[in-house]
Length: 366
Picture 1 (cartoon, rainbow, N blue to C red):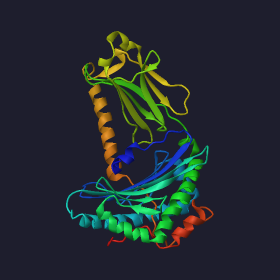
Picture 2 (spheres, rainbow, N blue to C red):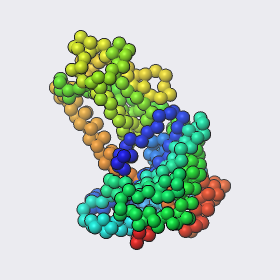
Picture 3 (cartoon, helix red, strand yellow):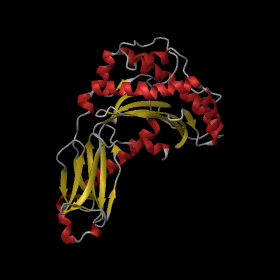
Picture 4 (cartoon, rainbow, N blue to C red):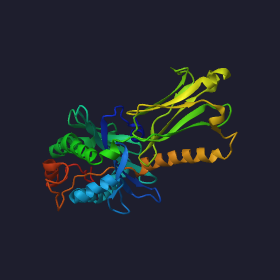
């Protein structure tokens, strides 16, 4: 799967599962965009943000701000990592542009890592740590074999060095199997009312022209464990149906759509068709009957073109922001002031990491 698409299509299927995801990105040649940005997402909701312009950590959820207030050492840790990553990512992207012999133009370096936890079975799906460069997978950590995988020849030198670096291997293993799951559980517990609740969407029927498919569009729902389908007389339709993917809205909620080609349904049967939206954990579905009077169409109501265009542009802008500005935070430089074991998520494992030289950070010559 293309590295950039991972940011858009990852979603879980069980109401009992929770996710912790860090995204971070460095760019060159992109005007009016911070050279480095980073985010933390918990259950698909933006929780923490930082960039190279402000060089500060910003809590994006009330529960996260409250967590920082209760555990200021945790905020200090994230702040230190954000500042450290700015120089690290700048040096690394400069090195890669030389290694690929492409020093001009636009370049994007990304990193994605995190984990997943099922609170019913207490099973942890241990995390991932992967880098992407200019939209392609560059190098990733394989937890089962404790080795690095380099799909591109330009990453092979780095793979050899990192495979031989046992402190780096241990560092990644500890974060992915101990520290990240521990933080995720603490975050979910602290922000339970926000992270485990549900939000129902608004559902609309859209059609560009009378000959276009009818789109059933749902937006504003949470979490991202949802499904949509068309049915006729209580039987699900498959012919002429095109399923869309679940996409983030940028405010912590999600959107999705499903198209129905009317040419596959006789005119007399169309009013017997319904769009069904199902949100995991919610008993009652949202059912929208296919009714000409309820379809918003450019040809019938020109003013609605603006609504559709704004929604489309918003989705495209969001994707661009995720691809160019998304990031994650947590890195591995030696800290001069270390968090308290008793108050900082991660406990003794985190203290061990902070007391050692950062084994994860590649050096410029790599």
